[in-house]
Image (cartoon, rainbow over all chains, first blue to last red; front, side, top):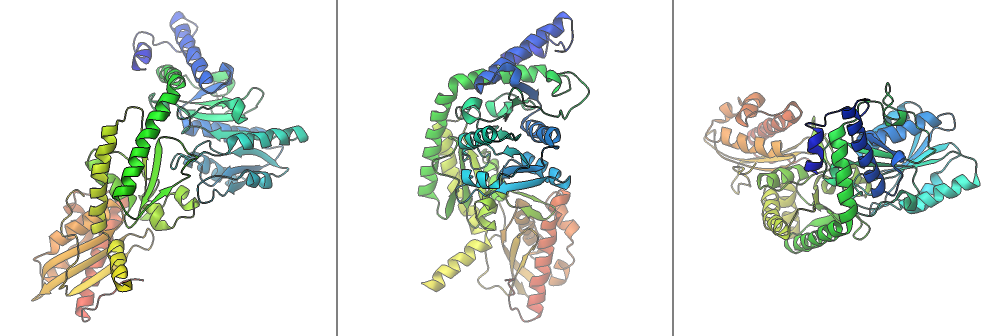
Length: 384
Length: 118
């Protein structure tokens, strides 16, 4: 992948919108990448709009549809566990008079199609539900929602569009826009191991969007701005490799996760797995460790060379526990103690063994320092 | 964070206090052994983001061996310096540590009864 992009950082430095030879060379490379990305999701090349990443793809999809369709209605349906970019866009639209229905996801983090159906209103213009959640990996019933949207469009003359954020899912499962029945789909290059700073939005032929970047003809008038050619070339190569290797990667990651989850279950008490045990991406494991705070666990693991993530962020003394874990009905303690472990194609069984060796020690050490844990033990003694 | 000092409890504590940051739920419990108006030992238990643990650990190091009067002079700024600085949004961790120390000493002055927030 690096080899594929290197020439576009050195001798092939043309601007893809330039008419001269260097420019045309860059244009050809961008178009090749466009075909690779389209192939990964079963789309046509001219349905791919390159953007700067998943967040921009989500912005272009949701704001683009809402601005273009404002005359038909001002209601959006989404879920309670969308990526922060979708959450942020919906909140901003609410301030401008849009109404947003956020569907519940219940204990396992999955939206019910009947809830989508019940939430539909004559003024609904967009449904945006992610394909797979970025913290807990649960898969949403996108195909069923797609079928519902198509039926709705057939039976009425209404304009209703369906967007799915597939940033976390692409490369981890088969993603096909025809099977899913979506009109818009967001992708991010770095989730496929390409450099950060590139993404794409799939826009089904015939779907009209109000561009969010203005002042240039790039991307068929849908996203003005000079294309980031090296990043796009790498994205194309990453998509090609992901398309070839999805099954192999998936099996590898799932095997590592099984070893990990079995090991954690055997070695650590007072944990809660978050998300659906079956309907989820193969590479994510989200666990709440009782009595301790995720950020402390994250830093302690980082000091041992293990990189994990939390969904919560403590800032200005205001802790915002992960809204995703809260949406599962978990309490603040479990939401604060939630950690996401993710396994990649280059991880090995030895890596997992390392984590299983370090994690119980680190959890125990933090629990030794936790007043919640001490109180729990005192309570246990007094009950006995 | 790698080697927190003075974590735990004191069986023979003269005073114990626990304070909570009501906004984010950070929780710090501080136990002191005080002899002849001097802090002979300090132990902490903490639940919260890493700066809470780090500040609690640094505070116990700062106050052990100090007279109660001198310990009360320790400022938030000194504690922040002792941990090598804290970003603005994590300053509350140092404030919680100082507040818990003051509560513990107040408890001692009022008869040593521990007060735990509910």
